[in-house]
Image 1 (cartoon, rainbow, N blue to C red):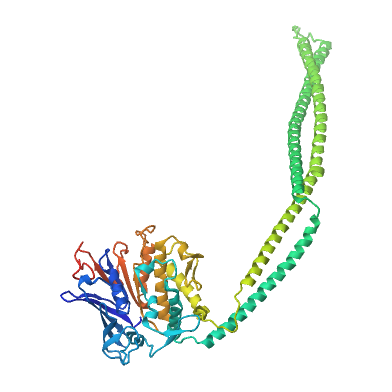
Image 2 (image 1 turned 30 degrees about the vertical axis):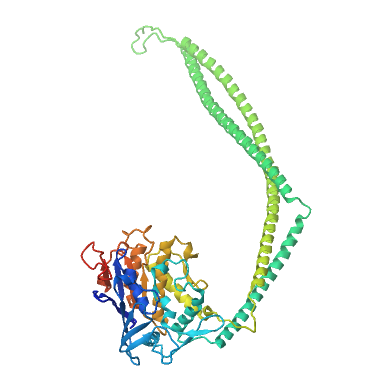
Length: 602
C-alpha cells in the first residue's frame, strides 16, 4: 500500500464546532442522504490543493479548512483560509519548513515556497521539473494540480461519456498526459525523442504505403482473372437467359413430377393385379386338391358297385358243410342304387369344378396380359424420367449455376473495385510528414505494454465486478477510454453505466500506478460511483454489478487509499468494517448519528 494518503479533513470557523473527517489508508466510504455534505468533503480537499472554487458558502460561518496528509517522508497539515491563495503548512518532511506557502509560483523578489513542491517531494519528486504542454514542445512546470485529475473524480465528471482520465479542456490534455508519463517513467520527453518518434512514423507510413500497394496489386491481378472468366458471357443477356432457364427448369420438374405420379399409379395397379394373380394360383391349387378328392370318391364308389356285382355271381351255400343242416337264406341289402346316386352327384360337381378351373385359368391369363402391358407402360415412364427428363433438368441446373457464377463474379468484381478505391483513398489520406517540423504527441510515448496491461486489468476488474454479458474489454488509446464488447462507453445503456465504467477505469488506473509508476500519488477519490445506476440492477442478487463493484473496492484496498462518496440509499448492504474499511455515515437527523459533514449546519 502507498505511504501517501489523506488522514484528515477539518472545517473550522469562529464559534463553530470543528467538523472533522478521519480517513484510513485503505477503503473509506462516506455515505449519507442528499445534502449532508458528502460532496463538500471532496471540494475541501480540492480547495486545499489549489482549486479556485470554494467548497461551501461564506454564510455557513466556516472560514478555513485543514487537510492532513501522511507521506513516506513525514506528515503535512495544510490550512487554507477561504478566499486566500496561500496556505499555512505544518510539516515534518525533511528539507521543508513550516510557514506560509504559495499555491502557485509568483514573480516576487523573495518568493515563498510552493505547496506543490512540498507535495511532489513527499512522493519522491525532488526539485523543479518541466513537462511539455503542447505539440510545439512548449513547457510548463510540473505541479500537483497538473495530474490531480487522475486522483480526484468529482460528481460532475463521474458520468462523463468521454474519458474520465483526460480533462475537458483540450489545452490541459497534453500536459496531463505528459505528467502521467513522468509519473510512470520518471523522465520527460525532449525534442530528440520526438525526432526518433518522427522517424518511426515515417517508416511506419512507408510500410503502410507498401502494404496497401501490394494489396492493390494483388486485387488488380485478381480482377484481371475475373474479367477473363466473364468473357465467356459476352453478348448474352444473362438476366433474360437465367429467367428462360428457370422457366424451363420449372416446366421440366413439373413433367418429372407428373411422370413420377403416373409411375406410382401404375405400380399401384400392378401390385393389385399381382395380388389377384396370387389369389388365382391359390384357388387353382385348392381346386386341384378337391378334384383329386372327387376322383378318389368315384373310385371308391365304383369299387363298392363292382364288388356287389361280383358277390351276386358267387353261388350261395344252402347246406352246412359240418352238419349237413340247411342254412336259412338271408336277404342281402344292395348299395348299388345309393352308390349310383352319389356317383352322379360327384360327377356333376366334377363338371362344375372343371368349368371353374377354366374360368380361373382364363382370368389369370387376362391378368398376366394386363400386368405385361402395365409393366411396359411403367418401364417407358421410368425410362423417360431417367434418360430424358432428369438429364434435361441437370443440364438446366448446370446452366443456371453458370449464370449464377457470372453474377457472383460481377459482385466479387464490384467488391474488389470498392476495396481498391478505399485503399487508394487511405493512401491519399495518410498524414504527410513535414521533415522540417516536429510535433509532440504524448500518446506515442506510451509503449505497447501500457495498453496491453491496461486491457488485462480492465477485463479482470469488469469480470470481478460482475459486468453483464462481458466478452471483451479494451483501452482505446485514441480516446484514452474503455471500450466494452467493441462498443464505446457512450453507446452502452446510458448514464449509470458510464458512471460504473468510469469508476472501474479510475480504480484500474489507481492499481496500474501502484504497480508500475516510478512516482505514485497514492490515493483516489470518487464522488458517487453509482450515479444513475439505480435501475436495471437487482440488489438482491449477491453478484449484481452494484454489489460486485463495492466488493471490488473492498478487495483492492492494497492498491492505495480509496475514498468513496455515495448516497446511502444506493450502497449495497455488505460488511465493510469486517474488511477493514472506514465507514462514515451522515444520517440527516433521521436516525442517531452524525447529521452531516459541517457540524453546525442542519
